[in-house]
Image (cartoon, rainbow, N blue to C red; front, side, top):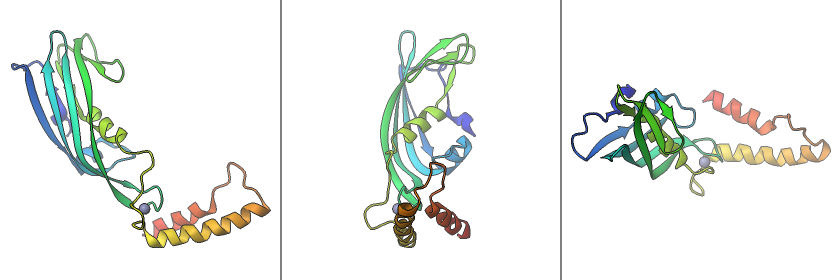
Length: 178
Ligand SMILES: [Zn+2]
């Protein structure tokens, strides 16, 4: 399924070519990632042929569905970002770092699926929550009740580092019931 994200650089007859993709649920499922499993993101890859390499300007715009940090319900996270990648031909595949990748010259193609995914994943803020007041109310109520109880418990017996916060056990129960 991810073969369609192969860009054949050898057939680049013009100096610049644009490839467009829709990154949907199937895309995220095929990559088997943990953080993002659903979404709809329009992606464009502008491939420019340079003297000894190819310049790929990648743009992504859309939304992904991820878990809210506060109430653990699904939330819609808009994403809008871009990144540049240089591709060179060489004897074997080699990821040189953030912005340079070597692909085998006899194959002459680069698969952009992971590069596009990385742009999406990196554009998600570390802290992501629903807008104020839009969290799952039932979940927030349980969290609030248990955090009050937890504060009392904490005063009598401070929890060690490996002790699981009792709030999470209740949350797990709730999630399993759904
Ligand atoms: Zn929330």
